[in-house]
Image (cartoon, rainbow, N blue to C red; front, side):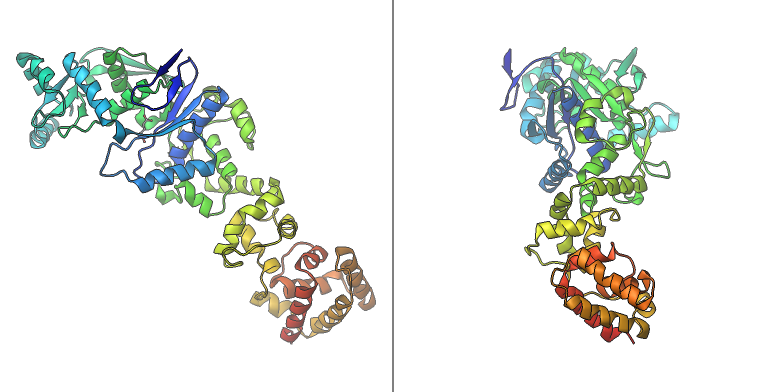
Length: 494
Ligand code: GLU
C-alpha cells in the first residue's frame, strides 16, 4: 500500500516496518547524550532494516538557530549516522499542528484558557502555600463547560484574544507506559496537568507537535532519553484523543558524570564535534557511546557491522551510565592502533596543519607518511598526539628537549656523532639494513653498547629520548635530514 504522509513531500511506503526518529531541538550543539539517542535509533533501524528519520524540533523559535541545525547535522555526519528521511523542520508545519489542535477543540478534548500569566503565578503561589498540587486548577475547563464548545468551533484555534489551548487530561485512573527498557511504569492521572498545546500566540508546544509528527511520520518506536518518560503518559492521552495507535517506547537511561550528576560541561567536553577537534576517531566515539547503556557479553570493541547485528533493547541497562573520559581515550587508542596507516595519513592532515607542522594545502607523500605513522600509531592515543609525534619526521628543523640535550649531546658523543655522520654520508642506499650495518661497525670498533650511540643520535634526530627503532627512524627521516641534524647536534654538543 502506498500512501502519502500528511504534510511531507516524500511518498512513504507504509508497512509494519520499524520507523524511528531522532528529534533534536536545535538549541545547542550535538552533545554526547543526544548523539547516543541518535545512535540507538540508528542502530535499531539498521538492525531491523527500518527507516531512520531526522526531525528538527525547532518550535522554540527564541532558542533554536540555523547554526545549531548545521552543527547537529555536522555531528551526525561525522559519526556516520545517516538518515533516510528528513531533516524535517517543525516550524514548517505550524498549520498542521493548528489543524490538529482545532480538531481536539471541536471534539471537546481541548479548551481555551484565558488565565493570564500573573493569575496563574498567583494561584501557583497560593497552591504552594496550601500544600496543594502545582498543576493548572482547571478554571477555564470548567468555564468552557458552561459556555459550550460552539465558540471555539467558529473561531478556530490561535485566534487573537482567544487565549491558549489546553488539552483535557483525564482526571482519574492510571496510565501505564510499557517501556521496552524500563518495563511497566505507572502514572496516576491526577498528577497530569491540563497542558497547553497551543500558546496564546498560536504557536504549538512540544507535547502536541511530537505526537502529531510521530503519527504523521508513522513512527513505530520512540527511542529517547528518559528525561522524557514523564511526558509519555501525557502524549499517550493525546494519541488516544486522536484515536491513534500508541507507538512502542524505549527510554534510555541518563548519562552522568563521574560525580553522578547529569553530564554537563563541568565534566569535560560534551559536544560531539569537540571530540573531533581533540583527535578522536568517530568509530571510537560511536563504540564508546553504544557501551553507555548497552552491552554484549564482555566485548568492548565492536565494528559498526557487529553493532548493527547485535543491537537490541534487551541488553540496554536500566541504570544511568557514567561517562568515563579515560575509557573513551583508551578506546580511541585502540582504534588508532587498529586503523590502516593510509587512513590515518588522511585523517591526521588537518591536525598537522593545526599543529603548524605543515601549511594549509601542503601535500605530503602519502606512502611515506603511512610508513612514518606505522612507527607511531601504537603510542598515539589521539590524532593530535599522532600529529605531534610526526613533527620530527616532517619538520625541517627540530628543537631539543633541554634535559635530553644536556645528557646526550656532550663532548663524548660529539666524536661518535661526527664519525657516524661521515659513515652515513657515504651510504648510497639509505635503508634500514645499511644503516644498521654502519651502527654495528661503529659499536664494535669502539666496544660500546648500542645505546651509547643510539641515544645521542635519537636526541639529534628527534630532539628527545623516545622514538621508534633507530634504523627505521633514520630511514624514514631520510639521508639529507639525518646528515643535517647530525651536523647541528655536533655543533651543539660541547
Ligand atoms: N526535541 C526533544 C528533545 O530534544 C525530543 C523529544 C522526543 O524525542 O520526543 O529532547
